[in-house]
Amino acid sequence: MSGIVWALLGAAAAAILSGMGSAYGVGVAGQAASGVVSEDPSKFAKVLIIQLLPGTQGIYGLLVAFLTLSKIGVLGGQIAEVSLATGLLIFVACLPIGVVGLISARHQGTTAAAAIGIVAKKPEQFGKAMLFPAMVETYAILALLVSILAVTGIPM
Image 1: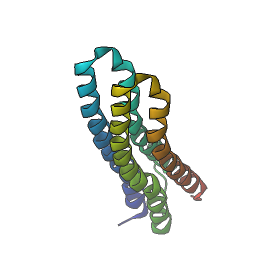
Image 2 (image 1 turned 90 degrees about the horizontal axis):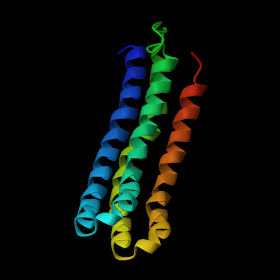
Image 3 (image 1 turned 90 degrees about the vertical axis):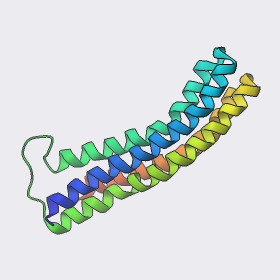
C-alpha cells in the first residue's frame, strides 16, 4: 500500500473509532437520561448536558481526521506525494485519539449514566455529578493533544 493510503486509513481510524465510542457512550447515558426524564421532565436540561459529554471524543477524532486530510492535501484539492514511511507515521499519529477515544467514550458513557442517577435523586448535586464523567474526559484530551502534535509535527 502507498503512503497516501496509510495516511487516509489513519484519518479514518481517528474518526471512526472515536465516533464509535461516542455513539456508544451517548447511547448508554441517553438510556439513563430517558428514565430520569420520564419520571421528572424538569430534569431534562441537566441530564442532557451529562448525556452529551461522551460525544466529545467523536469531535476530537473528527478534528484529527480533518487535520490529517488537510495535511495530505485531500481537503485542498492538491493531494500530496506521501512516502510509505510518512504515511505510516501519519497512520500511527492518528491512533491515540482513535483508540483512546473509543475506550474513554465508552467508559465516560457508563460514568455519565451513574452521574445521571445522582441528578435523579439529588438534582442540587449536579456540579459534583458532572465531575465524574469529566475526569474520564481528561484522557481523551491528552490523546487528542498527542495526535495533533504528532500529525502536525510530521514533515511532508
